[in-house]
Length: 188
Image: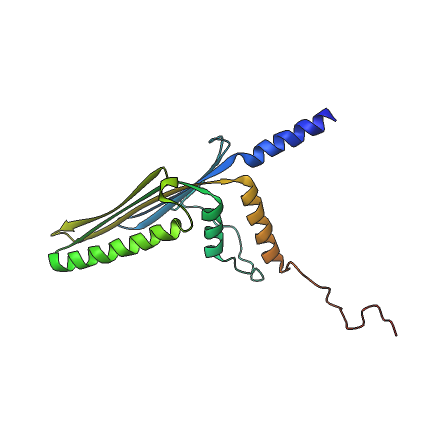
């Protein structure tokens, strides 16, 4: 009995400890990204890096339904705690008039992205935030640096996994048997 209570207590503690997800995107000469997931304060860590060539031995299954990436991202942002947002866009055009117009357009797009991330949240909830669009005169260049760190409890990851398995299996919440009829009990 004591071991069962101890096991349930440890399981509860493991479900409460947050999972840290770090998204990093950089576009300089070519596009590269890195997603780092760490748990138990960095003891368990998984990293997906676009610069490392990974052999893909997984075959795509044609019977799988697509998962809506927007809903998944929105769920992570709503349930998680955004710790850091860093966005630095460096743009350079030789024509200063055109550079001013493009810089203003990029500022508005970056603010739209920022408002998407902060939907239903206060700006003071984020500890470290930095957004900057830097114009470079007399140079032709375009660079993006983006970093976002979100902490999410493991319970929400399990809920997302259950939703994914339901969509993959094809079942709904209110699924019926395939042989249902009007007179189900065959009463005369």
